[in-house]
Length: 393
Picture 1 (tube, rainbow, N blue to C red):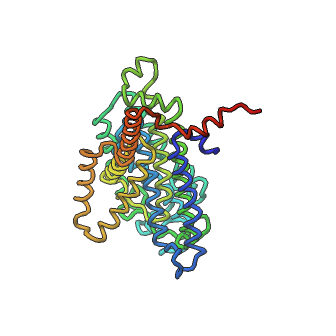
Picture 2: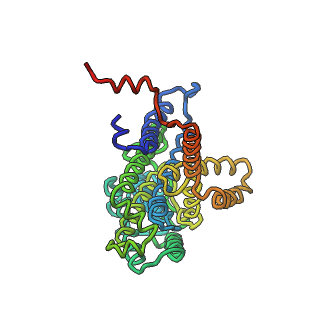
Picture 3: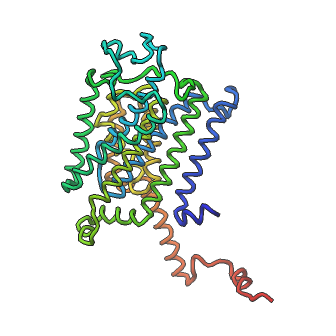
């Protein structure tokens, strides 16, 4: 009842959040508390795999906020995802301490190998989780704010903006590949031991990270829904559909886009921070422009501008990727490209858009049949109506 009042007619949001909260509770219990020989046991590898998919879903949702509702096709969202991952990876590296290969309590192994004498200044503070969590939010958010400040005020739009975002992530890729940057170079950051004092490889820790990923995605869905259904969300859509008219009405379109772009980057950074401890590594490969393009594919397949669509797209495409790369790995990229072409040609609104179109067509057909019969398709039982209409004695 409370959910129905809060979410109104868009009950898919309430259902999605309820499902995510439920799996955040049920899956860890089935993994940790249920014996491995039970049919209800969820294997640890499945927990880690689906947890990774949930992080991808949050990344796709962050792109949907700017692409689906603001019309900004960002081909560089993988950069914000990777920056959040590196911030968490730096914290995890500081937790290794003297348990590394070289036994240095301060310097990570790759710095000892490269003959670094002292810890770089930008690594200070990452021995504290609260500082790392703050950087997960601030670093992607600040980059998006500065980038958007110049790009949107210069009125760069369309394909030109997409190319610039891709150039940004490629520049970061080249920078992080350098050993003298202090981020592990080509090998990146890995060999993590603990997170918040718990063994990162333990089943209980993996289950907790899975639950955190599901809850973060649920919170992302709620925040995105609150944004797009607010007054600001209507302005956001107006900027997407008719930016010049929105400017004519007195709204600063660049400010509207800047807020959405920054918020989207923060969501992507959080997704990256949750992703790294579950996969156990972060390297410059996460900045690859192809990764950002894959996020666009997930969002398009599920249905941009629908909130739920990108989540469905990310889960389905990555599940298909896991199957294809195991069964026919040499054809995976062809399958992905074919899927994107097929969606563009035959499902421009994605899976959720196709479902909505089918539901609308079904309702219209029911209304047409009812009109031909001279009845109202929404009429209830006449006896019940008469009984309700009788005054109380």
